[in-house]
Length: 456
Image 1 (tube, one colour):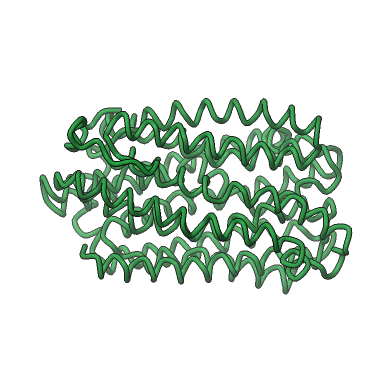
Image 2: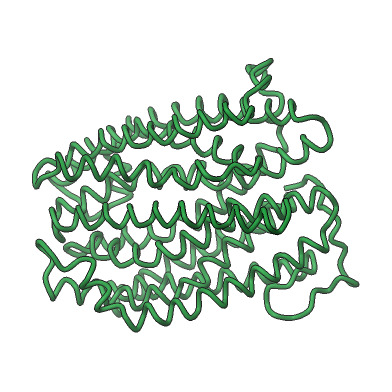
């Protein structure tokens, strides 16, 4: 892919993600105006977040992290048909596995709710359990969409993928506006099922049109492309990325002990997720496939320079943006949320958390970039070990800071862990591959950047 084509693809992704994130904000504002900062709002956010949360933890970015490099390897070393077999066998294997997981989680739904939101009890716990069992129907759709997204990204067809969030949110917004009211939160469960189905159908059609399924179903039941090495790398990448996504979940679990804490934390963190999501989407949808392709083609030095350039660009964009958002947190929150049942006191509560959260923005994006480089080298072990350590630290730090600063301490824990996470990954990249994210010259003479072997 030429630099001009890379730029065009990045623009397409950014526009699609802006529309998706803005629609997500509209969705949050619609719920906030209807439900305010109440127990019903906590239930609504819980219902909407579960499928994507489970997908991020159990499938998520790990599918792309493993399938995209393998897709490029098969295309280069064997044939496009072999890569298509990988896509189809992944759809079949992951689809069946996710269906089994959904059934198991539904059977233990009450206990899962108690783990995800330990502050729920009584009628709220029962309502959340019923909602959980409904939205779990959407989980297989989300996992299959993760596979189709990875296949389209590997082929450079990013437009439909970037519009997936917009399609999903459009269905949810329609349901919120037409059907949601206090006491009728249960309708959102079926709205989530419809929304994830629409997204999957759009991506499946794009894969069919791109020929990514052509010839891929031959011998699909044998699943021979999903060998042990691929499965192990997937498990490690899944764990690393899932643990990273687990950070807001940890904070929400602690926040559930405070009245309206989940809703307040969610509204504040959404303000960070909008710019973080835009930058991270460009990295995962456009730059990660490009970096993977360069390593597969033994153009490692060029890949290293690209990583350094992107790191500097992320810092130049995200640091001033974070500072500006922090300074303008109060008017931003007022403009977006001060309506319906959210008044000045609730606005100030959300803005106080948002000011802290914005400090994590650059680090959250840089963590995505660093992990992508490791995954492009087929190294999933080191990111997993680091993510596991950071999750343990996050739990301990959240408990300690909650006792000292309340819900503000929960957000401060996210900031501290995010920056430490990136620093450790950056040092690891330089020591293992000579790739610099810290502003110093790459150690080309000291470290060979030949593509790493397919190890875990």
